[in-house]
Figure 1 (cartoon, rainbow, N blue to C red):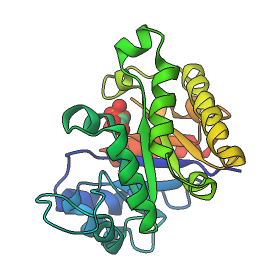
Figure 2: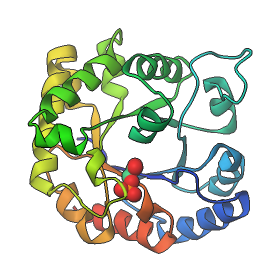
Figure 3: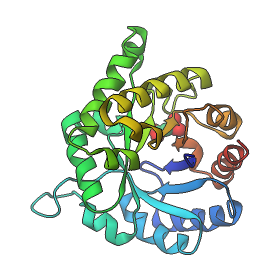
Length: 251
Ligand code: PGA
C-alpha cells in the first residue's frame, strides 16, 4: 500500500515569519491527517519551519539543491546543508527550474543522486508542455525525463523515490488535467519505471501536480496510480492546503 503524500511547494513566497505562522496554523488544522504532509518553503525559511513543525505530522522539504557537497559555487545550497536543517525531501527538476534556470535531464540526475547520498528523498518533477501535448508527444517526453532522472539508480533507490507528474500547462493556470488524463499518464510513467526497475514500480509514489485545489483533490487521489499531490498556489493558504489534505484523506 502506497501512502498518499501531499506536498506544498511555496516557490518564492513567504518570509520567515509568515512561514512559521502558517506552519503552526496548519499543524492544528491537519493534526491526525491520514496522509503524509510535506512543506517546501524557500531556503531562508527552512530552519524556522523545521522548528515550528517539530513534534507535528509535517515533514520538511527543499525546492532545489546543488549536487556538490561543498565548494566555490556562489549562491548554491548543498544536500548536507539541507539534511542538517531537517529536510527529508527535496524537489528536483521542477519545470520552473528547467525553464528559467537551465536545469537539464543531466543535472536532475546528478541532484537526485546527491539527495539520496545524504539520506533524503528526491521528489522528481516530470511533465510535458502544451505544444508537446498538442503534438501527441506527452508519453515520449515523460519517458525521456523519467529515464534520465533515474539513470544509474538501483532498484532499491527507485522504490524510495517520489515522482511528481506535472503537466506544465496545468501549473498555476487553473487548468487541471482531468483525473482520468492524469491517471493515464501516471500509469504510463509507472510502466516506464517497471521496465527500468521491475517491482520497484509498485512502491514508487507518483504525485500529480498542476492547479490542485480542495475541489478536485478527491477525484485525483481516488485514481489507482495517483499517490499524492504537489501543490503550488493552493498551498499558500492554510485553509486551502488543509482542505486538500482533508479531501485526500477521505479517499
Ligand atoms: P500550482 O503549482 O498548484 O500552482 O499549479 C504546482 C507546482 O508548480 O508544483
